[in-house]
Amino acid sequence: MKLKAKHFTDLGIAPGPVRGKIKRVVVPLVAGGRELRQVLDELRRVAERPDDWKDDATWGKVAEELGELARRRQPMADETWQERPERAPYRQWGQYIDSGSITQIQNACRLPIAVRGALMPDAHIGYGLPIGGVLSTRGAVIPYAVGVDIACRMKLSVLDLPLASLEVKSKKLERALERETRFGIGAKFTDKRDHDVMDRDWGTTPLTRRLKDKAWSQLGTSGSGNHFVEFGVFEPNHADAGLEEGRYLALLSHSGSRGAGATVADHYSKLAMSQHPELPKELRHLSWLDLETEEGQEYWRAMELMGLYAEANHACIHRHVARHLGAEVLLDVENHHNFAWREVHDGEEVVVHRKGATPASEGVLGIIPGSMADPAYLVRGRGSGAALDSAAHGAGRVMSRKQAKKTLDWKDAQRLLDRRRVKLLSAGLDEVPMVYKNIDVVMSEQQDLVETLGRFEPRLVKMAPAGERPED
Picture (cartoon, rainbow, N blue to C red):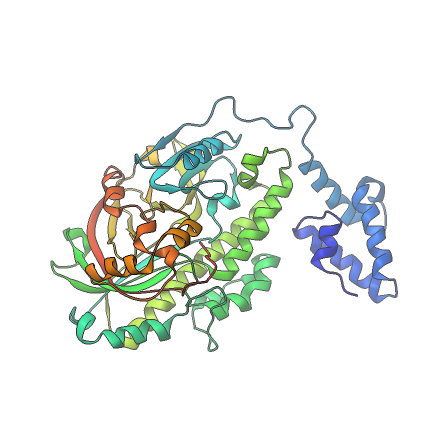
């Protein structure tokens, strides 16, 4: 019988560094001849009354840690839940936002750590913070406000291939997409992709150490949900786009940190919620980690590593597709949109969470996509302080995946794709154009946040096949 995660759960010991310390006590005891059942019985008593065990030669250090965790998680009698005296200020862009998303940003602004919020025109309901929600906090990070797919990211590469390749060499482009990336929850490569991100210190947290092999096998893959890789026509409309006037063949991708990122998000979201039992039900997914604690620092290091991994993921996709086609890259633009940054706003350093929102500081380039049949835009940030230097991250959904599968029809979707001259290699019905807002309306509602430098029209699109569970 071995010590398992279930044993900790049964004892009410949340995921975190203390589990590793407990293992370093339990394993030698069992190896020395004691039954695991007896050791767990003793550990239960330690967890129930840690102060009684602080001087014990075996359990002393574990007892101190469990006692400290219990004190952190136990709200004081006079502060079971104290929200801000008045809600933190927030601004909304866009008229067509559902009431649930507005309620979510308002709830986020009730948190005692909240400083300022913003709601982008593509907003729709998420866990805790809405997708398209931006929130600055003081000294704390909220895992669910970063998002389940940490460092979900866009990347655009303009290639030196003839635009006519979309017609006369379409099969070659299709083969490049089919062979040089993978789609689906468990998608991976047997022959691992090479990137120096795997030379980084994956031991920066106990969790990321365990995730390294899985992450490496999935490097260069695209996942499921709203993730895609597609070819299309890019047309710059501003000299600062970095290209001469004309129409170019381009590659656009959207994906994040894959299974490793999802595991990090799940682990630290649960840890944060275990530390804030005082929060009312509607705020549970807004539980935070104090950045001065070991747990907060651990999450921050893991999040930043997932950011580097997501960047490498896209780099591998674009490098291998370009190599497959024998192409050179003329322009390369990319950005995260599920992340937290330390930034200075209103003269104060804060943590800015952009959950489904594009960084849009003055002069910063980014990509805002539409749907498989609608354009994406190369944009440059205007640096709006009221929006915490942010913009929309896409068109935004107008219906749930369940509703889409129940009410939409592939024949209607295919007719629309045919009119837009889009060839779809694979996707689910819950990702067809009708589930999204009009991207041009969204762009018109944030003209004070970004300016447009170019437009990308999709022509050849690949997403995860129907039936895949979404990662986004």
